[in-house]
Image (cartoon, rainbow, N blue to C red; front, top):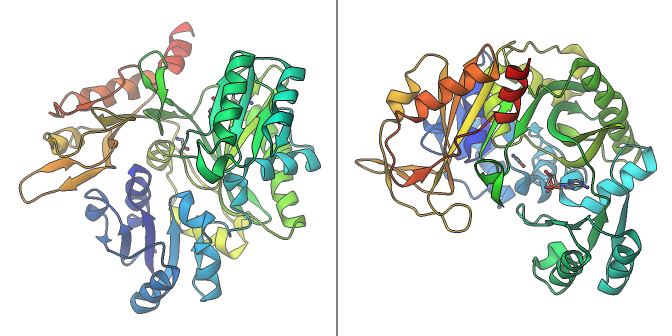
Amino acid sequence: MNILLIGSGGREHALAWAISASALCDRLYIAPGNPGTAQCGENVVIDVADHQAVVSFCKLQGIGLVVVGPEGPLVAGIADDLVAAGIKVFGPSKAAAQLEGSKAFTKELCAEFGIPTAGFGRFTDAAAAKAYVAEKGAPIVIKADGLAAGKGVVMAQTLDEANEAIAMMFSGGLGAAGEEVVIEEWMIGEEASFFALCDGTHALAMASAQDHKRVGDGDTGPNTGGMGAYSPAPVMTKALEEQVMAQIIMPTLAGMASRGMPFQGILYAGLMITSQGPRLIEYNVRFGDPECEVLMPRLKSDIVPALLAACDGVLDQITLRWSEEAALSVVLAAKGYPAGPEKGSVIKGVEKAAALDDVLVFHAGTKQTALDLVADGGRVLNVVGLGKSVGEAQARAYSAVDLIDWPGGFCRRDIGWQAVKRESDG
Ligand code: AMP
Ligand code: GLY
């Protein structure tokens, strides 16, 4: 079968690596891909925003399955247009992608179906929002309803900060994403990301992971897309995983089906493990990045039959085998990230790093010039180590990082610190 993968990040290099290893995959195309995906298949230039152009490509190349990496094309309805053209696609419809595209949509679903999450209010004008904040008190969380590239959440410690965030969002500071604002109770606990494959009716638990959102060591500095991750997340015990499936994932699938918008694809639950049990922070409708880079190396089963079963509504026939080993990924970012990453600096030593045992290097914002591999984005490389413990995986990842010669880049030096501390505390 010929497969088309959409996207260009580290997540897509990890997916391309897994898909290209499948016995079912004849030709893999990646649009637009990156220099890493070019080692797994053929990068192609298609205007992904032009859904008819994607359909034409699929017909021409006999594509049997399209896999959509990022949320943007899903929220724009690419899955609907492919399905309408008779092309199989892994990823939710535009209606179902509202689980990521609209925080208010998800909160209403949680309220209707009894899914544990933070208490909330929704507002379309500043005065009512400020009155709600005055009544609830700080700390409190202010969120723009729509997609805001990770900038739509303000954790307000004080009422002044909360009111400032409300004013910023309603005065258009985040564009259309801030036309509606969701205000939430601030939940306390440890965070974990949990991934489930869904076919509209059935869900198959994948694995858990922990992301590191802040740019600096010790979880300091501004938020980023993620500076590193590890899997599994030790906080997610087997019992907790079952609780998440029963109380969060399955009611979501049932709720979406009853609304006539069955969810097919990856449901990525951002969870807060509170003293009252797991509660939903938010949903994404795709794999996390850099979480995907630590999930794929741990997946021992062929991924393609699972993706096809999700499309066909027969996920109940699939089981997935996971390695007991831990995986840990360190993101190498261009200096200046996240505010203004510098492009064009030369990166050397990637092959040396990737040649180490139990190490994988996934590309994100890289570009191959005639002579060199150069930085071409914010997050540029993901260096993944595998090991019997998170500590061992961490040591492998950093020994590979140290072989990469890139004065124009930087990374966090403490990825996995919580899990390593947990391991050494025994
Ligand atoms: P989101 O963009 O919704 O994932 O939020 C970004 C981050 O803000 C999350 O990963 C959490 O660390 C934090 N966060 C969001 N909502 C809450 C909440 N209600 N209580 C505590 N932390 C939250
Ligand atoms: N790593 C966070 C995300 O993919 O949204």
